[in-house]
Length: 150
Image (tube, rainbow, N blue to C red):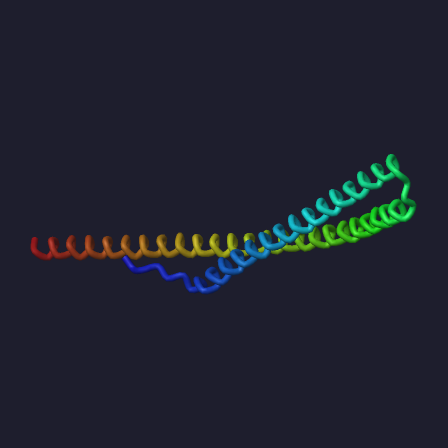
Protein backbone atom coordinates (compact mmCIF):
# COMPACT_ATOMS: atom_id res chain seq x y z
CA UNK A 1 0.00 0.00 0.00
CA UNK A 2 1.24 3.46 -0.83
CA UNK A 3 2.12 5.95 1.86
CA UNK A 4 -0.39 8.73 2.59
CA UNK A 5 1.03 12.22 2.17
CA UNK A 6 -1.17 15.18 3.12
CA UNK A 7 -0.13 18.04 0.86
CA UNK A 8 -1.32 20.72 3.29
CA UNK A 9 0.42 19.25 6.35
CA UNK A 10 2.59 22.34 6.69
CA UNK A 11 -0.54 24.49 6.95
CA UNK A 12 -1.99 22.15 9.57
CA UNK A 13 1.29 22.37 11.52
CA UNK A 14 1.13 26.18 11.37
CA UNK A 15 -2.48 26.10 12.58
CA UNK A 16 -1.44 23.90 15.50
CA UNK A 17 1.33 26.34 16.40
CA UNK A 18 -1.07 29.28 16.09
CA UNK A 19 -3.49 27.56 18.45
CA UNK A 20 -0.72 26.90 20.97
CA UNK A 21 0.33 30.56 20.76
CA UNK A 22 -3.28 31.64 21.25
CA UNK A 23 -3.49 29.38 24.32
CA UNK A 24 -0.36 30.98 25.77
CA UNK A 25 -1.69 34.48 25.03
CA UNK A 26 -4.98 33.62 26.71
CA UNK A 27 -3.18 32.25 29.76
CA UNK A 28 -1.04 35.40 29.98
CA UNK A 29 -4.14 37.60 29.74
CA UNK A 30 -5.81 35.52 32.46
CA UNK A 31 -2.77 35.94 34.71
CA UNK A 32 -2.76 39.69 34.04
CA UNK A 33 -6.44 39.95 34.99
CA UNK A 34 -5.82 38.01 38.20
CA UNK A 35 -2.92 40.30 39.10
CA UNK A 36 -5.06 43.40 38.50
CA UNK A 37 -7.82 41.98 40.68
CA UNK A 38 -5.30 41.25 43.42
CA UNK A 39 -4.05 44.84 43.24
CA UNK A 40 -7.62 46.08 43.63
CA UNK A 41 -8.16 43.80 46.62
CA UNK A 42 -4.99 45.12 48.26
CA UNK A 43 -6.24 48.70 47.70
CA UNK A 44 -9.56 47.85 49.36
CA UNK A 45 -7.72 46.35 52.34
CA UNK A 46 -5.54 49.41 52.58
CA UNK A 47 -8.60 51.66 52.47
CA UNK A 48 -10.25 49.63 55.23
CA UNK A 49 -7.08 49.97 57.29
CA UNK A 50 -7.19 53.78 56.88
CA UNK A 51 -10.87 53.84 57.80
CA UNK A 52 -10.19 51.77 60.92
CA UNK A 53 -7.35 54.08 61.91
CA UNK A 54 -9.61 57.09 61.39
CA UNK A 55 -12.34 55.58 63.59
CA UNK A 56 -9.81 54.94 66.34
CA UNK A 57 -8.57 58.51 66.14
CA UNK A 58 -12.12 59.83 66.41
CA UNK A 59 -12.65 57.89 69.65
CA UNK A 60 -9.39 58.91 71.25
CA UNK A 61 -7.79 62.28 71.63
CA UNK A 62 -8.87 64.42 68.67
CA UNK A 63 -5.99 65.51 66.48
CA UNK A 64 -7.50 67.44 63.62
CA UNK A 65 -4.46 67.19 61.41
CA UNK A 66 -4.33 63.38 61.71
CA UNK A 67 -8.07 63.11 61.04
CA UNK A 68 -7.76 65.28 57.91
CA UNK A 69 -4.79 63.23 56.70
CA UNK A 70 -6.71 60.00 57.22
CA UNK A 71 -9.71 61.33 55.27
CA UNK A 72 -7.43 62.45 52.46
CA UNK A 73 -5.80 59.01 52.42
CA UNK A 74 -9.23 57.40 52.19
CA UNK A 75 -10.20 59.70 49.31
CA UNK A 76 -6.91 58.92 47.57
CA UNK A 77 -7.58 55.20 48.00
CA UNK A 78 -10.99 55.71 46.40
CA UNK A 79 -9.28 57.32 43.42
CA UNK A 80 -6.77 54.46 43.20
CA UNK A 81 -9.59 51.93 43.39
CA UNK A 82 -11.49 53.64 40.56
CA UNK A 83 -8.31 53.66 38.51
CA UNK A 84 -7.70 50.00 39.30
CA UNK A 85 -11.26 49.10 38.32
CA UNK A 86 -10.52 50.67 34.92
CA UNK A 87 -7.37 48.53 34.64
CA UNK A 88 -9.42 45.45 35.48
CA UNK A 89 -11.96 46.36 32.79
CA UNK A 90 -9.14 46.70 30.24
CA UNK A 91 -7.66 43.37 31.34
CA UNK A 92 -11.07 41.73 30.97
CA UNK A 93 -11.37 43.14 27.45
CA UNK A 94 -7.91 41.78 26.57
CA UNK A 95 -8.88 38.41 28.02
CA UNK A 96 -12.06 38.34 25.93
CA UNK A 97 -10.09 39.23 22.79
CA UNK A 98 -7.63 36.42 23.50
CA UNK A 99 -10.51 34.01 24.11
CA UNK A 100 -12.01 34.91 20.73
CA UNK A 101 -8.62 34.50 19.03
CA UNK A 102 -8.18 31.12 20.71
CA UNK A 103 -11.63 29.98 19.55
CA UNK A 104 -10.85 31.07 15.99
CA UNK A 105 -7.48 29.34 16.00
CA UNK A 106 -9.06 26.16 17.38
CA UNK A 107 -11.77 26.27 14.71
CA UNK A 108 -9.22 26.72 11.91
CA UNK A 109 -7.16 23.81 13.21
CA UNK A 110 -10.22 21.57 13.42
CA UNK A 111 -11.21 22.54 9.88
CA UNK A 112 -7.79 21.56 8.56
CA UNK A 113 -7.85 18.31 10.54
CA UNK A 114 -11.20 17.44 8.95
CA UNK A 115 -9.76 18.23 5.52
CA UNK A 116 -6.86 15.90 6.30
CA UNK A 117 -9.25 13.15 7.42
CA UNK A 118 -11.29 13.60 4.23
CA UNK A 119 -8.13 13.44 2.11
CA UNK A 120 -7.07 10.28 3.95
CA UNK A 121 -10.47 8.67 3.40
CA UNK A 122 -10.24 9.49 -0.31
CA UNK A 123 -6.72 8.05 -0.39
CA UNK A 124 -7.89 4.81 1.26
CA UNK A 125 -10.81 4.55 -1.17
CA UNK A 126 -8.45 5.04 -4.15
CA UNK A 127 -6.04 2.44 -2.79
CA UNK A 128 -8.87 -0.02 -2.24
CA UNK A 129 -10.09 0.60 -5.80
CA UNK A 130 -6.56 0.03 -7.17
CA UNK A 131 -6.22 -3.14 -5.15
CA UNK A 132 -9.59 -4.35 -6.35
CA UNK A 133 -8.63 -3.67 -9.99
CA UNK A 134 -5.34 -5.52 -9.52
CA UNK A 135 -7.13 -8.49 -8.01
CA UNK A 136 -9.63 -8.47 -10.89
CA UNK A 137 -6.81 -8.31 -13.44
CA UNK A 138 -4.95 -11.12 -11.70
CA UNK A 139 -8.09 -13.23 -11.56
CA UNK A 140 -8.86 -12.54 -15.21
CA UNK A 141 -5.30 -13.38 -16.20
CA UNK A 142 -5.33 -16.60 -14.18
CA UNK A 143 -8.69 -17.60 -15.61
CA UNK A 144 -7.47 -16.80 -19.11
CA UNK A 145 -4.35 -18.92 -18.64
CA UNK A 146 -6.48 -21.88 -17.49
CA UNK A 147 -8.71 -21.49 -20.54
CA UNK A 148 -5.69 -21.55 -22.88
CA UNK A 149 -4.37 -24.71 -21.28
CA UNK A 150 -7.66 -26.55 -21.73
